[in-house]
Length: 192
Image (tube, rainbow, N blue to C red):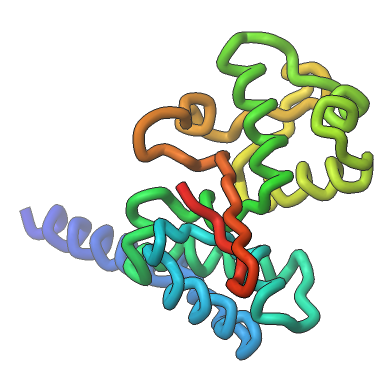
């Protein structure tokens, strides 16, 4: 009986040690990245505003990169407590830019309808985007974990990474939707 208790205590201690070391602390945002988050949090919910990171970076101004957008998107994913918009509509709604959402819709629909994924050329033509813009969008969708490489998917060889991304349409599910409001004299904003 004593050996079992010692073994149990050792296993619990090992499990706690592993879980403590497995949690890598998130990299803090830079000052310019925090400025974007502050802008978003202060504007979300007003006039149905669910503006995304890319639009906020443009409005706030400055020299932002895809890495900045990824860092901010990941931060928002890890901090849904920041605003009801994140808890209601999901971090993807604000982390993805409009052309990434369009790419995701096409790939999601193909998978849901059990069709092969479109080729890169077909995506370029269908979305009326440049090849570089589509490749950039695919790359960001992979970074965010929305899609994953799957050679059996056909076309661009990507599938949705989770089943929930195949069935995202419906009430209060605007993951890959985008509607922008632009009023003269006001900052543009995205709505649901």
